Image (tube, rainbow, N blue to C red; front, side):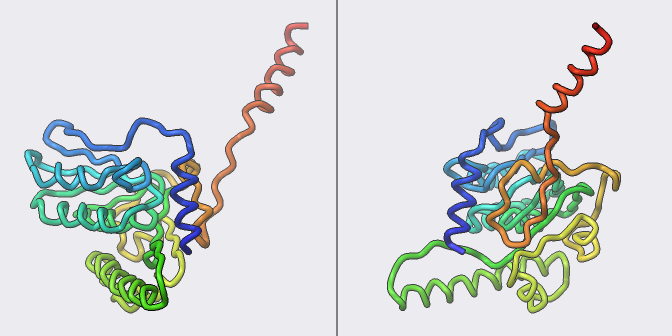
Length: 235
């Protein structure tokens, strides 16, 4: 698992970045756009976001999520800030809420998901170096962390931590409908026939059971086809 976790960071760090993920005030709302790996160094800075939430000065918090996950402890700290802010927290999963990002989604007082989006949760990963005693200590810590994460999911789903821990043994991917049925979200929006392209934003192949990404059209071939058709009209 440690190699897969490293691959997740390296592959997604290497892709072309769009506008930096971050947060901003929009009227009386604080907007958190979690559209990157959750990492204070080069992705979405959850520590700064938590500080912004704690400063207050807003009526609601809107959290937009399209993220493959990231650092679980900074994510949990942001969840704590959101849960204790005393304001409505509206979560919108627009593409994928995977790993730590699915934990963040649980902070919403309302949690909606686009019909083509997905939610994924699993047991915690880490990197560790040391002797056998060190590895046993790390395993014990991960067991405790898994229990804490299961409790976060159970807080909104009421499915029971034992059931959730069993599901967390593997990378469990939920469609929008499944997420609603299992109460991870409170609403599904969008039309069933919408074509989900948001999953193509990230390389999710490092996770087990990752869904197939819709193939992007071959634009060069499409253009050549149109040029051939155009030539029929101009000659």
